[in-house]
Length: 366
Image (spheres, rainbow, N blue to C red):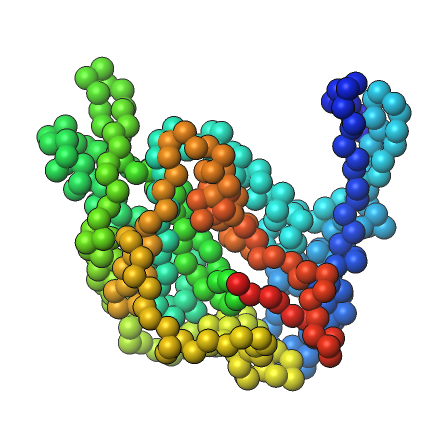
């Protein structure tokens, strides 16, 4: 029995705990009804479903259900008892566990990591041809992130030297990055959201570090950084032999007959990956807008160079910790899958009325 102390004031109505019911959500019903069929069909086609994928999905089906384990909790003041179901503590699928991790990580960043300084959000998207490889090549993804961060830091140090002179010769920068794996349409889209300090740390006379803010980057500076990233990415791919090489080495997922290859490739092309509509374009309902009819957006501090898209027009003031927390939470949720609370969001679970007239799952997009 876990005793729980009551924190309710005698003059306030205590909050009522309500057990979440994942078994009543459309997402749970889809996984429950289709998982075994999906695994059996993959086995028939001799396509390997990685064990970590199956383990994550099966754990989700047990998360929050009392029949799979619980801990009894009792209020130390009134003696009221409550059963709290165990959670799966998954990192990549369960909306409840990911949301909890999102909130905890965002609070940790704001309370213990990010200093009282202005923070700017930098978002980097890479060409479609790279996203498939980045989805499974963690080493290449890390190298691409290093190219991105180094390019932004070089810009910050260059602007610091121009503004503060010789004392900025050894300038220190700071950043926290979230690797996002999908877009708003829930398609595979590996890209980076970074919270980067809008300034540098310089050494004071007493040896301590003092933060010195910098003006926002100009449109020309953002374009210069994007061009640098595009150029360095080409060098990176050439050094790794990924621009021209053995097709089997270029695509180890296809070589190993892994189902992840199909699941990664299809959404990049906006195609259905499995089921009777496999290979066909994703069905869309409602208003349709032709991409060719849209003008290229001309926002401040945004640039597009050879498929490399860079955005840097969102900044959070030093004292606006609430907004910073919201930014971090949004990004984290997307990673566990556009400032610190918003940097951590998870793809929304299917709403309760998320099916077509034929009973197929439907996802409303922005």
